[in-house]
Image (cartoon, rainbow, N blue to C red; front, side, top):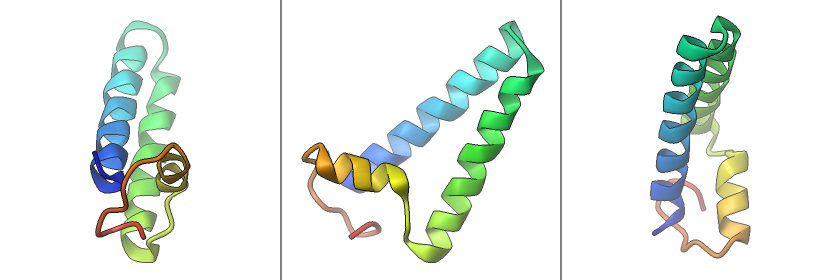
Length: 67
């Protein structure tokens, strides 16, 4: 798995988890969804993604978006 796919999978899991937590625990968990969406938006413009740096250090191959 390359970094791009790992970042997208991680972001998707964060969104799904936060929506489930908002439904079952507290609506305040939707702030995590907002944070994930805002981070994905800024990463698309700047190319800077903290999750991509973590996945690179974990040994994922480089992708096209986050070099």
